[in-house]
Length: 432
Picture 1 (cartoon, rainbow, N blue to C red):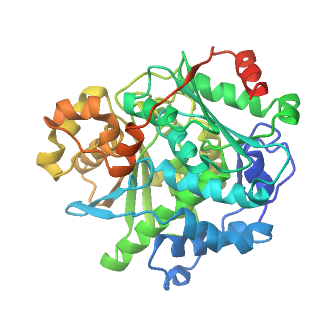
Picture 2: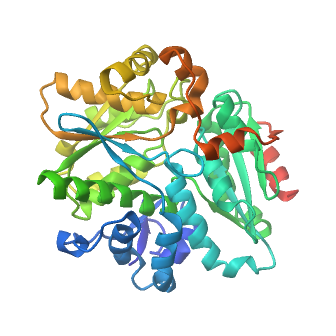
């Protein structure tokens, strides 16, 4: 399979080239030239996430040297518990926070690290590959955990100072060794813009080989589609019905992954985007017109994105599939409502929700108020213990961190301050 740029100004690339580059040479995002509609019978023998992933991703790996490694990559990357938990009548919660850093980003980060590790021959190259990533909270720690200690790789994380939770900041800075955390006194959108500028700087990349681990990377998009496939297949086998997914989203990568699984023929009815007070995506879904905004801080900080990168992929999908719009919806949730959903979560559902998952729960309730009888699955993107300062006062008790998160919180952490201008970033990359 070949992959094309959303800007359509560069030649199609094979999978390995697209994975290594991150961003296409014309500044666009790589998307599959086409997505094969698959027969569900292909998945009949599959009972685990790695097994489903091998079937779903094989067409994307066809014709590439990585095809022979697909089984091992899936088995080593996606061996994470992915429970589909009942939330009441015709509603479920897909818990994606059982990986090493307690957030859904672990799936894609581990997959990308295992893939690039094989492409780099175990790191036996003269110059290390620098994985440059902007994060609004969870991506950076997942990427750091996935690449930490890997020969031939360095990780540089840009994050908005003061706009991530204290525990997220601790995770970002607790690795050391080949991982550098840079706190930027600005927004996530600014961090993302700086990273994109670095990827477009050919002189810099000649000196410092760079690749991306943000959601612009195919190495993140493809594995994230697999847990939607796994969940939808389990639900259909158990009930004979199809699921609609409610995806808390900021940079749109996780939401677009759900749409990719749907386009591949998996039993997915609708895909609904739950955002915080940043309304760029809901406005686009409602009007068809996209207007980038400056990001606004919110309790659901990992979704504080005013100009999501993956809007390019979403627009590409909409242009390719004229029947897609009726399957989409988006809903913006303010901080007051997030607080209310966290506060009532245990009484209403027997669950404690992180602020991002709370946005999804509010959209579920919104759909029910509007009369929808769909079978819904709300995606739980992170463990609530990552946001103890928000969650614990609202639920009235401590929220115990999972063991892997607790171990990270006990390590010493270090980060460097970086001015929010490109020359400062470029200078720091050249001094790695």
